[in-house]
Image (cartoon, rainbow, N blue to C red):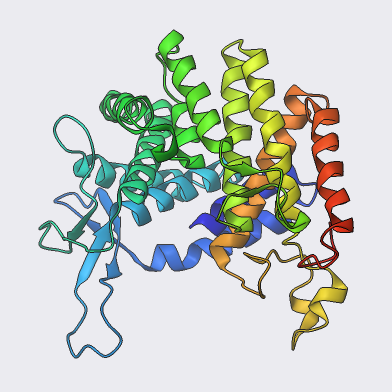
Length: 361
């Protein structure tokens, strides 16, 4: 589903719209095959999966519906609706999944993370964590907010707004800075929040600080310039740059130009680290089918590691950065000279440590 989102956004930004739009539609086919309609009027749609079990288990996996898969699928079909405005199926599917998401909303705040299908009993998983649950709830709130505005559905909007307020307070305001949920989906979701008061601006700025506070711009090895401290993943760096670009847009929309520029400036070093993940022809020559991997992004510097969601994250991140640079900053990062000074200092350390992990920097 994230690949559908990436390709659909790429179609909207590219001159080769039909090619990427067709790719997004093709990537959505497996999602449609996994969907089931339910309810008396069959007006709910849920994405059905098998529960994860151990490889050596003799048990038959049961069917479940998860909040994350359905929220991501809903967002995917909303993106497809934008690039195929004459196709009535995509918005209808998105709305039907939205009804399913609405049913998972708990009284007060939050969503039920997973249920058995078709019994509708709550599924307890040992794999859940606070970060993942917060990100998933942000995606569900984002989907319902977008659907509510598209369909003029007040019930969807009410659940979305209540949960956005809950996420703003519980996952940012009341958290230690280092424990704040630094998910780009949270940033995109908060862009839909309508109460744009001083407290809202303050918490967005706090989220931007949390996203950049552990950025490494004085690394021992120059290769690690722009990485998250002790987490040298290019995919994580891509999530941070995407988050900061999203926050920059929202802050600009709130007439907070200075705070927006600070957030966008911090994205530059993350982008620098991201680019070390890009596979060129010389690097791909070490692989068995090199032509298939040119311009792929690996996840880390230690070895070749490819993940489908990692590629989607890189695409979404690069598009978010490009769009924000063009819309708000004339195509150039703010405070670029300060960034160049930090990068030059990192490059000079090659004289001290002449064995970097790779040569791209």
